[in-house]
Image (cartoon, rainbow, N blue to C red; front, top):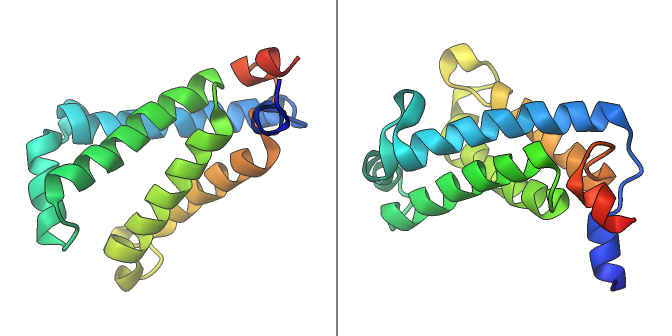
Length: 144
């Protein structure tokens, strides 16, 4: 196995990181399914694309597909612990775009559509990016 692949799959974390990864993954998979499929009260791809265009993220359809796909499939990757570092990297970038394009001007708190929740998720994705998937992950099995 190449050094790059070993580094991407390795983990030094324990069960705590697995718990964090799974819960953060559930949130992202659900949020992505709102964007892509209209589940859980979401607007689906067409509605999300229209909204993204309205805030200046164009082309809206591509941006909605990228954001929704990264959230949904990245979330699933975190849940099962497969390719968690690449998934966490994609989710980190998605969160940074969301924070700086939507939430930052509203301040910290969620009551004002601020970046509080996105910042908490960002902490989770950066932790997974740095530490790896932890125990109970497909990455750990493959790395052995």
